[in-house]
Image: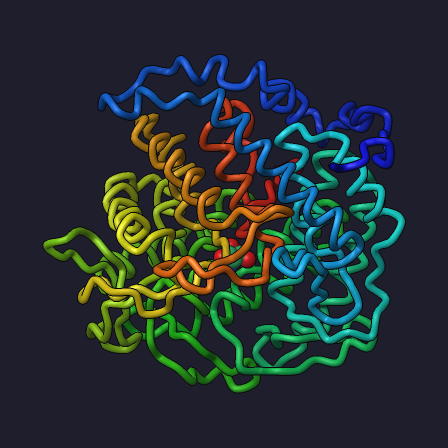
Length: 480
Ligand code: DMJ
C-alpha cells in the first residue's frame, strides 16, 4: 500500500489562478472527481450500433484512473528518483546511468489530467527540488526533447510553476549545440554539460520532431533562437525531399545526403509528418501549413495502399514511389490520429479499422506486421500508445460509440496481459504474451492518458486550444 502520509500536499493547485493555467481549471473540474466523469459527454448521442451503447464511460474512466494510479504507485515504490520502473524485477532503470526523472516529468500532466492531485504535487515537488541538467551525459536530442522538454513545458502551463519553465529553458539551452551542423539539421546526441555532439546519421523523426517543444519554449521565454533553430532544421530536411516529395529513413546532417531511402510512416519517419500538421496548428505559421498539405497529398498518392482487406500505408522507394514492402506495425498506427486532427476522417477511419484488426488478430499490437501476409514480423509490444491515441481522436471527432468499445477492449487486454503486481510490463511477444522487464515512461505519458481521455468528458481537453506533442504533452498557445 502506498503511504499517503508521505505525499506532500501543496496548496491545491494554487497556480491555477495564473493566466496560462486557467484553461485547465474548468477541464480539471470536469475531468474528475469521478462522480463528475461522463456527465455531459456520456449522454452525447450514440452514432449507432448496439454493442457500443453498452459501454459505461463513467465506470471506464474510473477504471483507467485507477490503473494510472497503479502504474504510478509501482514507479513510486520501486523506482522513485530514477528514470523508469522495471516491473518484473521491481527495480529501476536509468537511461544514462545518472537519472533525468523520465517517468515523473513524462507522467506529471497525466496525473494532473486524471485528477491525481497528491501524486502530481509529489512529482512536481521532486522535479523542482532534484532535477538538474548540469550533467556530463551524452543524451538523445529527440527523446529528451519530446519527453522532458515537452513534459516540463506542459507541466509549467498546467501549474504555473515557474521552476518548470526555468528547467525547460536550461535544458533547451544545453540542447542547442546539437543544431551546429553544416545543414542546420541536428546531430542525434549532445552532451548536456560540454555541448559535444555526435552521430550525424539521423532521420526525419528525430530532426523534425523538435518544433513544437522548441517553438513553445521560444514563445514562453521570448528567446526566438529556439524557434528559429528548430524551424531551420525542419526546412533543411524538407528541402531534401525527393522529386516526388517523399523523405527517406536515414540522412546525414553534415552532408545532407540520404543514406537509406525507404519511405513510409513508421520508425525513423512517423512524427515528422505529425509535426508538420501540428506546428501549423500551434504556431499558425503558413510555412508549416504548406509543408503539411503537400506532404499529406504525397503520402496518399504513393504510400497509401488500398488493398481488398482495407487501407494501409506501406513502404515505397522515396525517389520513384515504387512499392517495396507491405510492412507496418505499432508505431505506424499514429497516422489516423494525425489525419483525424487534420480533417481527413475518411482515411483516418479506414486506416484505423485496419490497425484495430492488427490488434485483435495479433493480440495487442506488434511492432512489426506484414499486412500482405497477415503475419507478425516483430512480436514485441512495449506498451505503445499509437492505436489508443488514434482511437481517442476518432472518438472525439466522430462521436461514434464504436471507438468507446475499442477503448474498452484496450483496457481489458492491457489489464489481462500487461498488468503486474506493481505496474505494467511490456510484452516480448504479443502471441505468447511473454512479459519484458520494462515500463517505458511513455506508458504513463501517452498510453494511459489517451486511454483515460477516450472515456473522460470531451471538455477535459479542448483540442482547439491545445496541441499534444508526440509524447501526449498538451501545449497551449498563449501567445499572439
Ligand atoms: C513515443 O516516445 C512517441 O510517441 C514517439 O513519437 C514514438 N515512440 C514512442 C511511443 O511508441
